[in-house]
View 1 (cartoon, rainbow, N blue to C red):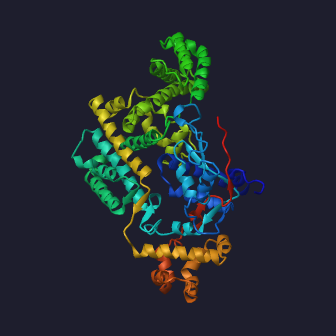
View 2: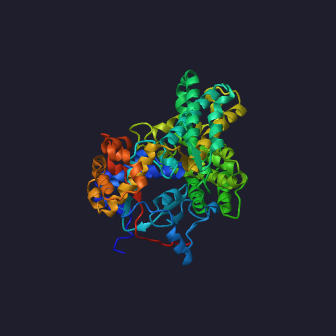
View 3: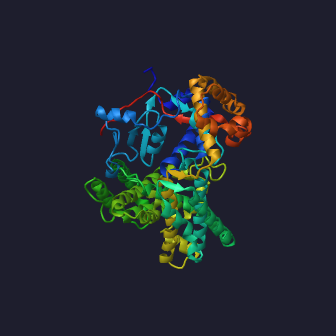
Length: 568
């Protein structure tokens, strides 16, 4: 393989893109894969930007064939030579013995970018090394179809490519917020408010029928209309509910993966060691708060001694975490805590909570109950970087902020003694038990949405002549471009895709020379009769803001190598 095969793609892009475009690529890629890994949400906007920049940097070239079928040839070869790919160089993330994001997985077979994409989730990263990326012409054309016309099989489409499926989940997010606002005010109402979530929960599987999506969206729309006046009275509570929903989404995502808390013994030991080194310098200020500094030191020393895989933290650990939190808030409010000291104190408190959550999770099979527990101190699960990814850009202009402005509405709740106490004080919820039920209901709704994103892989579609024409046209055009040697010409100017398809001359030549099957001739006859009109009905090439480079169907390298990861 040529020199530079193992050069990091980002380094190549750094030399080929302007600094501004390279920063845009990094931001778009980070945003896209964050949403994908944690929420199985393949954001179309960020994906279009990443594709366009990769194409502009000339690191993506057209594949010499149609999308590689998932025949798993390389997997068979690897098994023959004793190279197991499932779980290749994985870490036991549940143990806390290794870095929580260190579970790496090399991709399984050539030409299967979808598998690489699917394998990256939560704290697991799939990646490969190769000469260059490729893009498939047939997948590029499928990405360029008008909404509702794509097929990824005879009667189905991948859920990430089905706009109504995405819209349904967004509708449910909106309604879950509305239901929460109604529940806050004591408006339990009729039992029909949770019907859309019950319908979706009952239908969740690898395949979801398009008719079910339509029914769920219709029921949500009816509920939104029926309760529009009541939810509009929420005022500032509306912003709080929306942003709390996003916070729940982040916690729910982490409840679905091993070691979602992201705990790591080595890191916790380092944090507790740093805390012990700073307590002497804070001693007088801690004493003025009425806190036993010597007792705090003893508890921290005991926690450090217990911070081992075969031991458990002292029973006073939770109280110690809360004491540190109180010290941090009090001294910072009085202006007596430097940024470095504040960072150490709050990090130690959050790390203790993360340790407790890490140990509790295996004993709590109910993920929804776990999320309610985590909501008590969510900084024990999430980091500031997580919050930036989740909330950045929701309010225009705050993309570079340390803490996005959209996160502000939930900050007072995080500073309270508990989320239940906050709901009682801020919204007049009558008691702790009622507040718990309201939160449990909100968590349940968001958890159903998350399960659907995670588990529904395809949407079943009813037969449609226009979709069938699009599917056959893409297959025939891709073969013509490949066999006829047109790939390089089209790669140099992706605008030729629309021009060739609108002309129809290529297809007429295939029919005239007998290169179309009887079936192909029949299905493509509407296109042969009116190529420009049919092309415009099927594809988005004629739209003013359509950029073909934003829709290329990326694949991994055709040639690649696998590197073993060190076994630590």
